[in-house]
Image 1: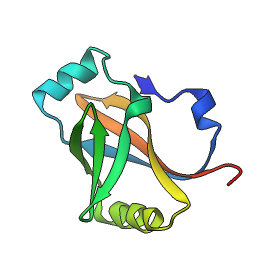
Image 2 (image 1 turned 120 degrees about the vertical axis):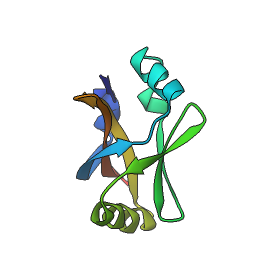
Image 3 (image 1 turned 135 degrees about the vertical axis):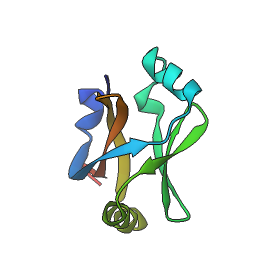
Image 4 (image 1 turned 30 degrees about the vertical axis):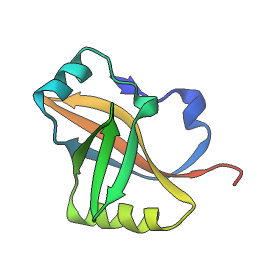
Length: 107
């Protein structure tokens, strides 16, 4: 459905990947279904031990297992690692986000 471009993905080393659910509202579903979301402008943010997916100035909680949250939080506390959304897929009737912990190449 939505993917990052190959040029963008070539800038990173991939450490670990996760598939996460996302808590969406009806207006968010309309944006995603009508292909009005730009995955390049989306971000993953850490706040109070919760991980948020930020798009179109909205922040939505990612639905992860506890051990996955701990892994992501520990990597993000280190300065060299980032968490980026790779793609959004529709599995059955649910939208899921594939996100990865990455490290920039050459730095």
